[in-house]
Length: 196
Image (cartoon, rainbow, N blue to C red):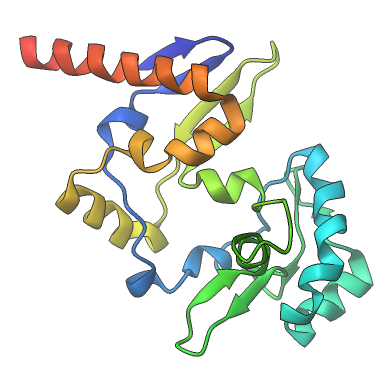
């Protein structure tokens, strides 16, 4: 089932799914797995170029070599603009901590106050994927990927609805007013569910 809010269409999976990242278990596998880089919005390309000098020393030599050869992004086989990758899927902005956990070098720099850009919105919103339809409407769908099994399990355990877990990035992308409408929709769905 889908719900329309403003110029977005939201899968009810956003309300029904439970999710909570469990970095201690997955070790940031979503940054290193996959057949393509993280999807980018066109405006984010300039932001990646802007933060690059700040995070450069946090990147691996392999990442630096890829960036020097092809830049911070490329167009994948599906025609989408994505972050450049090392080998089979590791984002060039990945960095590994001593315990083997992969984190985003951009997010780390943001949290340390060194840059004003958090990270690509597709990463911040994961496991929600955005798709802009021909009429300009943005569809929000839940992407289920094996690397996030532990996050779905932890979310179920702690009863954290996906739209609640993603409150910050959803507001970042669509605004506070829009998110308040999502909360109202969640309440309405809950009432319908309770009524059977």
